[in-house]
Length: 163
Image 1 (tube, rainbow, N blue to C red):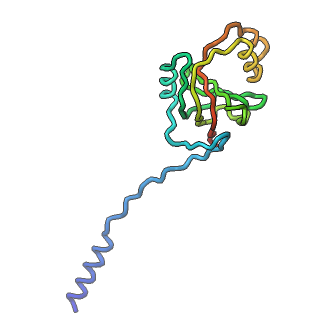
Image 2 (image 1 turned 45 degrees about the vertical axis):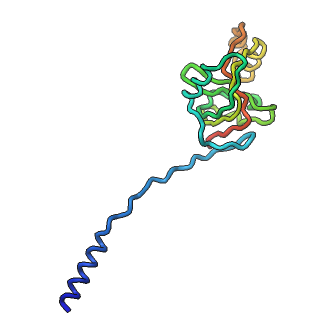
Image 3 (image 1 turned 90 degrees about the vertical axis):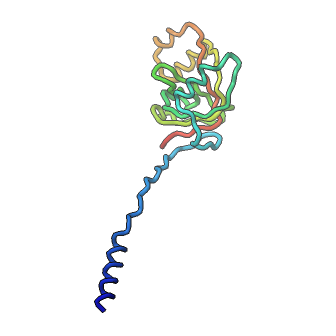
């Protein structure tokens, strides 16, 4: 009887000393609001990777790509264009395919993912002034636009904006 008691206590001690299961961190899902074509958040390039892609483009080149970065500015009239940060002094000018959708006018400084076509584009003085006016620039700022610019451009078919 004494042996059974000792054996039972030993088994109880062994079972209670069982190694705790390893706790794995759960990946937190980021919630996005979708605009245009349905796209996924996976495999998006970083802003730095996207900047390198732009630097390798020549006039007339177009690449299909998806990238994630911060929205610098959104059209304040309709949400019909936005600029996205590539570096502290570089950005991409994003329009939406076939003018088929818009993004919220208050999405400035939001994280976003865009999917579509990246290319280099020469933008006329008239268009630059139009975009400046839509962006809420002053008449004095608009008057300072006197030369066309070559910009990193993007035609998005789908956009995800972090909620």
